[in-house]
Image (cartoon, rainbow, N blue to C red; front, side, top):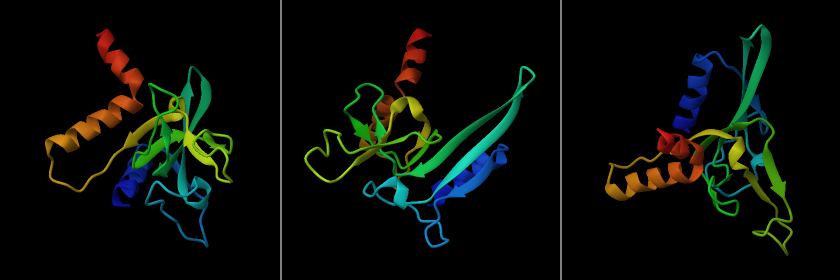
Length: 152
């Protein structure tokens, strides 16, 4: 929760306007595990207005906890980073998804192209397997960054 709050604070310091969304009984409800539907938890919507080529433009993102994100390499692989910054209103709720077919459940995720950035947080002393875990998560979710590096 502390890291989530620091991420929100970072965007606020960068000039973004913050708005709390989906309060539960007037309280912020953190999503502390991968289970549960996103609509049952709170999140922040962040906005930044900017003038670009004499035109006012606004960007809007959402900051979520434990939101499932589609792989950048393969559409049927999903990961759940601790904190995700996504394009506004891009969570997909799919009742016909292959992971929940023949059930009454739904599968909620964000397509990889709607992921702006993410954070993974661990409270461990670093060790090789942990570092490989971070590298693997980055490589799986940010394919376009790898391609940019290969072009250099």
